[in-house]
Length: 246
Image 1: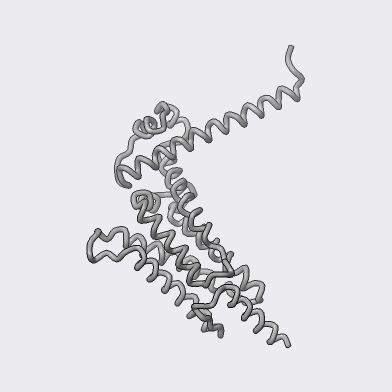
Image 2 (image 1 turned 135 degrees about the vertical axis):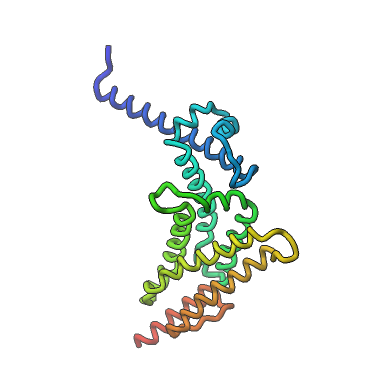
């Protein structure tokens, strides 16, 4: 005897959900295997579907079923790499009141430089090639995510102070592009006396970010002490705003 209709429907939905989870798990296995092979063999190596399947412990036919084609698989691998990279950067884009603005810049840029240096093959592979979104590379998508997070953090407190910074929004994208460009050039420089160390690159980028921020702030009449914490800066801005109202 067949179960009631509502139970049959529920069972199909439940089974479909389990199947989706099963596919998601397999896709993760495949992507992790592809990333491991790129890490080992390099960003320009011809990594075959067979190699990926063997590393993932799956049949080659399973890999083919999980993705539309090879281009789709490569795009998903780039997206997977960028997701991990960007998540690490985003976790540091927090306005800690006990730190100076320059310290926050430095921590974020250090993470970018150290991750790219530790995973140069992944960094290069993720930068080159289309993403899953039409007309955008995976690098462009990653830059947008970081720039938007940076902008949201910055504009959240300027909004409380009624400071109109919207015209400066493109600078968030410019800053992210500057960092990515210098890091890419750094990775392409052969090891040797001509190549600076990671800290030197991070310090230079931090100083550049600070001067960009402080220069535009000065144009608006705001002058900041590099040694002041975020809490001290905000306290002064709020005090100045209150004094103007009086």
